[in-house]
Length: 538
Image (tube, rainbow, N blue to C red):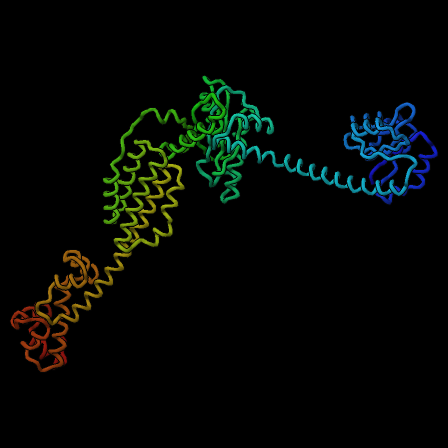
């Protein structure tokens, strides 16, 4: 229900309107009926009306003065002037006071009820607009922290004009005293473990906890700004005197790192940009802070790194990558895990001494991974390990050389073991083929180690060594044993002459066959045949 005040100094008129109007039918409640404007104004201090129907000429306070007073105090009150005067001056004053309607006496109740219906609809629309506006204000108030964070991230991530910065600072209640400004970026060195365990939720808790500690130190105690970024880092802005701002930034960063390690059991690193005496240059300082943090890749974890310290000359030597790649790949080809680990450690240390940023260091690592991939393709073994590791993606995720070194050591060892296992399996298959080939060709007196090795696609030396390891005897021992076993079968089961049997088992010289037979069997071919006929064992 909307509240109405009815004011008229003529009792008969006022009472007639009260009596004949069904206020509730139009959504109104008659909250007060008064004989003059003064009484109505006093009543409004207790009950503010939504609509006032008032006469103009009344004692103590006329309707126009009442309208003016109500308009000053209650801007949403609507006023309908009810009067018997048709003087234009009254109408003009009523319009200037933003009177909603101007009705003449005597009252036409049809017009009055029509007016009340229209005013009810308008009041409903106004109420809805106010409710919508209030809802928007609540949403804005609830969204302010997020909008503040988005603006601050844009301020350090892109070029934002001084006017917009000043306007948004007022909106969000931000104060940066100046005259100098510096940006920092904080990142957790590790996102697993700590007091919250492991998993994505726990990592978010760690980042949230670290940001809270940084906020207490930088923002609450020293008037800085602390906010999150899209890449799960924490950005910080400090302001102060140009001479002391850099020292303060490094000191507070070290303090925050200690507190985070103490309370959260994780380490963080900070990158610090240069000092600028122009708030619009914070984006430059922030980019420099990101670049500074990249040097954690070679310097290691738990660091506070200022960009100016990293770009003051230093050791500009570039490791000869091609030499390291050759040594590492050779060790992998030879299956020497010890040589691989030693070479890898030496390469990483030389890379660390050269102190490249993360991008330069990872570039060399990516080149090495290409070389490993080529080795895998060349040997045909290790593909499963290489594919499962997703090395090119994983290599980008490590924040320090030490982490990358440990991962490369494991990856290399896995690939070498797979290559060794693959080679062993392939060698068994090749040696089995070689055995079959020997069984097929043993009767050929010209059958040689070189021929069988070529058939097995191995070098003579490698085949000879692998064959002995596989069969427990050398190639000649194996071929001789096979030939003599066939010769014994023929001696015991056939009437073939000795020279004929010698020829059938691969010996062109019967005398040499007899010598070999006696040396290995312990008797001559003739003695063996005689014993076989008698059922004796030689």
